[in-house]
Each structure stands twice: as C-alpha cells, then as structure tokens.
Length: 117
Length: 115
Image 1 (tube, helix red, strand yellow):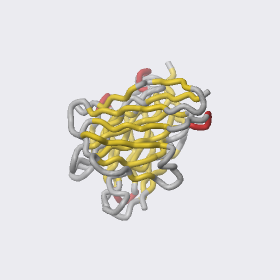
Image 2 (cartoon, each protein chain N blue to C red):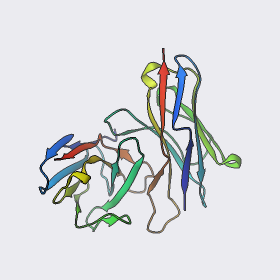
Image 3 (cartoon, chains in turn orange, cyan):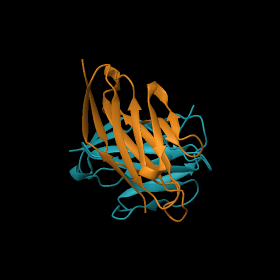
C-alpha cells in the first residue's frame, strides 16, 4: 500500500520569502511522485513530477522538488513566493506496482499556502 | 496539450433527479479516466476508475448503481448521479491518462448542489 503525508495543512509566507511544502511518502516499490496545485473552485494542475532519473525536478511557476529516497520525502520549494502562488497544493504518489490499484493516485491531505504582502 | 474539460461546471438540481457530468480529453486519447469527489477543505477521494470499452471499477464504499460511469470512447467518460440527494452535493473532478503514461490530467471540476 502507498500513502502520502503532507506536514502542515496551512503554510503562510510573506511575498518574496522561501516556500517549503513538505511531503513524505510510503511505498513498497520505487515511487512516482507528483505535486498538483488547486486554485479555488478549480481542478488540479500538474506542477511537476518525479518518475526516474534526476532527483531534483523543476516544474512550472518556479517550483521545484527533490526526491530523497533515504528520507522518503518529496518536498516542494520555491525561492521567492508570489501572491499568485496562494492556493492549495497536493502531493501524490501513483501506484505502479500492478494489481487492481495500478495507475491510481494517492493524495496527501493538501496544504493551503497563504502569501502575505 | 493534455487538456481535460468537464461539463457542466456547476449544476443545481432537485432531490430525486439524475445529473450527468461529462469528462473529455481534448487533445489526447484517454484509455483510462478517473472520477474523484472532493468535500470542502478535504483532499480528493477516488470514486472509480473508468477504462474505455469496459465496466468501471468502483472504490470500496462507492455505490455503482448510484454513480453510473460510462466510458464509451477514448475521449469521453460520463458520470451520472442517479436519484440525487442533498448528501451528494459535492465537487466532482475527473482526470484522464494516456495509455502507458503515468500522469493524470485533471478537469476543472463540476460543482453539484442538490436541493
């Protein structure tokens, strides 16, 4: 079974400050990991993903995440927050181990990012 | 690329009526589509997995006779909420995935309000 834990349901930063959203996963097989962003009353937009290869993954809007197998983490960062980054962020892991759950995403609980002027 | 649309974006209906939600992949063929439900301030809950040309696979606790899913083509899946009740009010989101690709692309969601 796979699971995702996002530490901190709410994160608040000042505009221009570093953004760090934490995600830890549990997986019995090498994971494929994703970060999605959701703006109010909208669907999810893919920010970035890790499948194989380079462990530092760059995504859209200046976000990046680093896969750390030893820490089972996939934290999302952005050097300088912008007001438009205010949204809810979801970390997710996909089941690529086969079986009836193959291809299904397991989401974390979500982290609401607030950016103050 | 990889655009998924949903229609309608919001719907209000009376209790006891049925509501159909469409999910379309606009620029790719989606052999698999997923239907999620999201309650306020909560994460997404997978309801069912829909494969083109076959019956949907429902998650535990999801009533298949209540939430009818049809995936008749490689670009269209529909979710019908039958005999809707106020407790079915929620935000329904679909996603689509290409064959042998791991990434799911999400639709913009449908807000259902049952009065």
